[in-house]
Image (cartoon, rainbow, N blue to C red; front, side, top):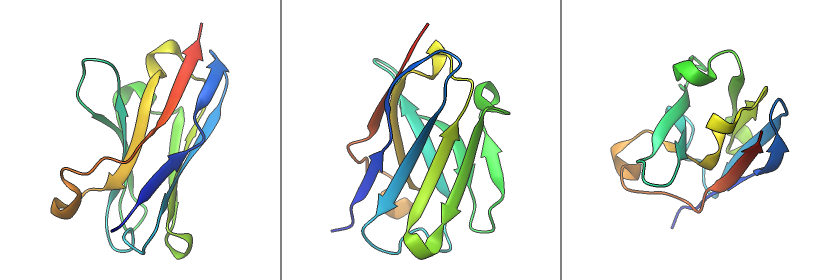
Length: 116
């Protein structure tokens, strides 16, 4: 069974930075778009960044200019660099390929807390 493991979360002060990493146990990113999602209590997972197989990126408006998504298919990893963090960025972050196969899949996520 494929596993996706997110890491890099933690507690950071507003204005600080974190780098999240997502590692897959198999080569499932190659050829697929991969998304980073944020979940906060009572709110469904919200996509904040997407990177396509040709490394085209998309960002949700609130993170545009502050977050950078990157991928390394050889290492089965997709990273999310988060700069100038605000309290609005607090939540649990997940990554997964944006495919039908992973439609209902969510890993354990990595939690980010931004203190103001």
